[in-house]
Length: 167
Image 1: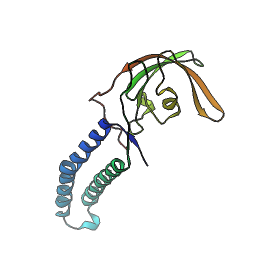
Image 2: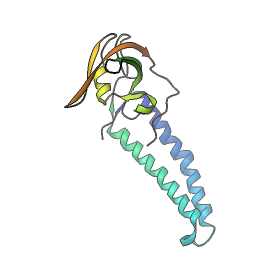
Image 3: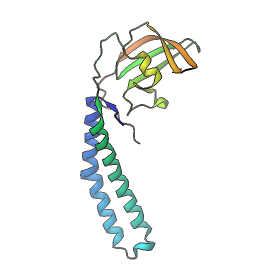
Image 4: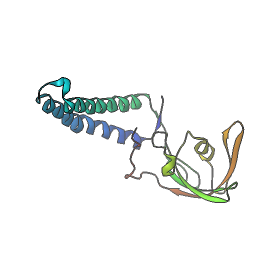
């Protein structure tokens, strides 16, 4: 599994675990107790739904705890003129003759739909550590790749409004 996480990612995961243990779990247990009090459990949809919600929360807690145990902590600091984790980058895509904007993030937060590109993706691997105006080759697979030029690097580290992607 060995996800790469920044210290900020670890902090957010720990906060989610604490919230799920102290708030969500307590609510789920109460919902199960209340549904159980309604009588026959074999035909009690409320009870089965409450149990399912409780189990889903417990499963998420275990998943996050396992992620923390196996994570590799990566440094998200970078020089002002080089692409690092949590930097927003404008790339000129030579094949398309277009400029695209991406933010480089850890694998847990990657979401290409939202413009969040994982450092483990071909694009992320290619641009990480490069400087302004560097022309980089993005190797997608053995048969395909393309060139991009780094046009702008914006330091967007430590944005507290970021959320971890929900699985």
